[in-house]
Length: 248
Image (cartoon, rainbow, N blue to C red; front, top):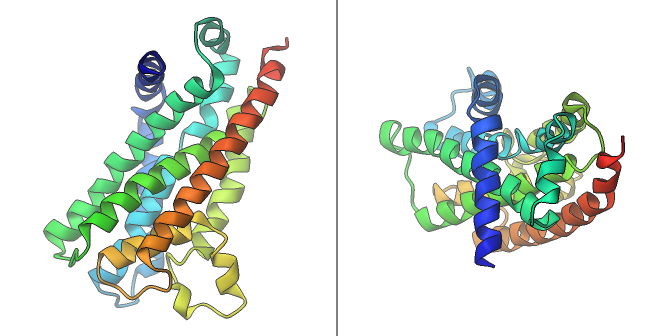
């Protein structure tokens, strides 16, 4: 177990150095959700308390799932995947390393809007424990989701990112970020509950003392359920498609 953790951490450090510490990744993962959110909120006269939870949730969502979809296609194209697989390493350990890098990236950059909200805008953080637990669990869930997209057996990162964005972009509009669940139409509310981002948004709102539809403890339980299910599907998909990556 200790050896597997060390190997996963080594892979995570490699991913951070090669894929994450780059300008385009930071721009897309941080500035894109920030400008998208500001474009929606501009002129609506909303307070910082109303704006902050959605911005934190969106930043966490985009940064945690920004690069993991492209890691495996890049590794396949550059023929570095073979080097990893001939090492004493299992597929779950390999995926753990990718997920760990994405998790750390998401957590670190979600702290930026959080610090701005609490330190500069004086948004009332009434339940910090819920916020910390929600950020950590959500980052893990979204990182695994990104890794699931990368299971597609291709060496073309743009193809995988297209699929990823086709899923991620609609989720931000149905997950209560811009419009709280309570204000949604009756037919839209059940759809929102199918998105893991909804529970991230709800728990962040609860942490800042806002009224929520889903209780914080239930949000954590549902996020944990999403995380387990996504992990099982991700590992299964990578194990099934890994031989296809090595052909040719």
